[in-house]
Amino acid sequence: MFWCRNFIKISTATKAKSPITTNLILTSLSHFSTANQPPVAAQPSGLGPTKADEKPRVVVLGSGWAGSRLMKGLDPMLYDIVCVSPRNHMVFTPLLASTCVGTLEFRSVAEPISRIQPSISSAPGSYFFLANCTAVNTENHEVHCETVTEGDQTLEAWKFKISYDKLVIASGAQASTFGIHGVKEHAVFLREVHHAQAIRRKLLLNLMLSDVPGISEEEKRRLLHCVVVGGGPTGVEFSGELSDFIRSDVHQRYTHVKDYIHVTLIEANDILSSFDDRLRHYAIKQLTKSGVRLVRGTVKDVRPENVILSDGSEVPYGLLVWSTGVGPSPFVNSLGLPKSPGGRIGIDEWLRVPTAQDVFSIGDCSGFLESTGKPVLPALAQVAERQGKYLADLLNKIGKEGGGHANRAKALDFGDPFEYKHLGSMATVGRFKALVDLRQSKETKGVSLAGIFSWFIWRSAYLTRVISWRNRFYVVINWLTTSVFGRDISRL
Image 1 (spheres, rainbow, N blue to C red):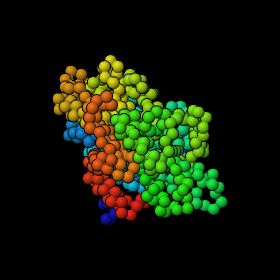
Image 2 (cartoon, rainbow, N blue to C red; image 1 turned 90 degrees about the horizontal axis):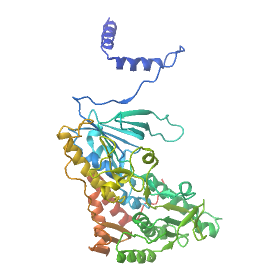
Image 3 (spheres, rainbow, N blue to C red; image 1 turned 90 degrees about the vertical axis):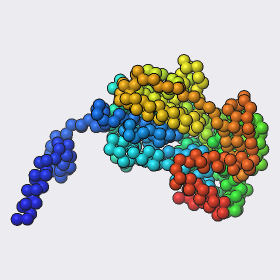
Image 4 (cartoon, one colour; image 1 turned 30 degrees about the vertical axis):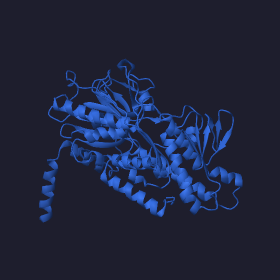
C-alpha cells in the first residue's frame, strides 16, 4: 500500500497548488491529448504595474554605453531593474577595431549585462529580456516588446508588455548611410561584435581565395583591396590596425599575395576633423607611410564589386567597411516624442523627455531641445557614459525621497542639471603610433601629443576604462600574445 499512500500525498499537494500552477499543468497535459479541442484564447502577458508596497520598476531600453553605465549605478535596494535589449552584453567599442584583425579576441570587448548589474540575474523583480522595444505608451506607463529571433527556423517572436515606473530610453543610434544605394547590401558596419566577426571572416576568406590557382591578376587585386569609407576615429583606427596586420602578419604568412593587398580610406572632408591640425597632419603622414591610400571624395553608389565616387571614378573592393557616423534609428523615428535637431529624442537639462512623465533618454538616441539653449552633444562613448552616471545618481536620489513610483516625482527638486565637459579624444594610427588631444574643443588650447608616448597613454587609458577585471585580464593577455606570437589568422 506504499504506492497508494504516495498517490494520496501527491493528490493532496496538487489541490494546494495555485490557479496559475494548475493552468500550467493542464496546458502541459493538453499536449498529450488526442481529442479535438477548441483553441484556448491567448492570455495577456508581461509585467504589470507595481504595487505601493513593492519596489518601483526602472525599465532600461538598450545595453550600450549609456544604458550599461546607468544600470551599474542604480541601487537595486531602491528599484527593480528591467533591461530590454537585442544583445545581452555591452560592447567596448574603442577596442572593437582590434578584434577585426585578431589583435584582440571578441570576448575581450564584450561585457555581460549580468556582470555589470548582478541584481538582474539574482533579484526576484529584476530581469533581462532579449527583445526589441516596438512601441512606448507614455499615458499607460508601459512599453511593448518583441523577442529577438534569428533565422527562419527559430521560434516565432513573442510579444509582451512591461509596465514601468521610470523609463530610460538608451537604444543608441544606427549607422548613417545617407540614403546611398547599395550600402546596406554590400558594406559592413563596425558597431557590434558580429560586425567585427563578419569583417574578420571576409578578410581571411579573400586572402585564401586570392591564392587559388587560376585567379586573374585583376581579380586578385580586387579581392585584396580593403576600402574604408569614413575618416573619423573609427575609420582611421581600423585602417591603422589593418595596415599593421598586413605588414606584420600577411607579409609573413601569405607571401604569395603580399604585394596585392592594399587599404584605401575614403573621406569627403578632412580626416579626424575634430582633432588638432598638427595631429591630423601626423595621422596622414603615418597612414600614408604604412601603405594606406587616402582618397578625398564622396561616395555616390555602392555596387557588389566597386564603389562609385561623385566624380565618376570607380574603386574596386573585396572588403568594404562603412564608418561614416550615426543617425536616429527607425525605433526612435517612430516614437511620438519631441525631437532635437538631427532627429534625436528631445531632452531637457535633467535628461527628461518634457512631454512624458517619468521618461528619460540618454546616449546617442537623445539630444538637448533647442529651448534649453544647449548644443546637441556628439555621439561619443564618454558622453553616453557620463549621462548614464548622472541619471543613475538622479534616480537614486528620487528613489530615496519617495518619488520612485509612477507620477510621484512631479514635486521633487531634481538638483543640478547635467553638465558635460569634454575630456579629450584619442585615436591610434598603427603600431606604436597614436594621437592624444586633451583640448575641450577645437577652438581652445590644450595638450596634444602624438607618437609612441601617446600610444602608451591610449592603451593605458582604454585598459582602465574596460569595465571588469576579467576583461582587463583578457585584453592584456591578448596584447602580450599578439606581440610575441603574432595575430591569430584562423577563420573560425
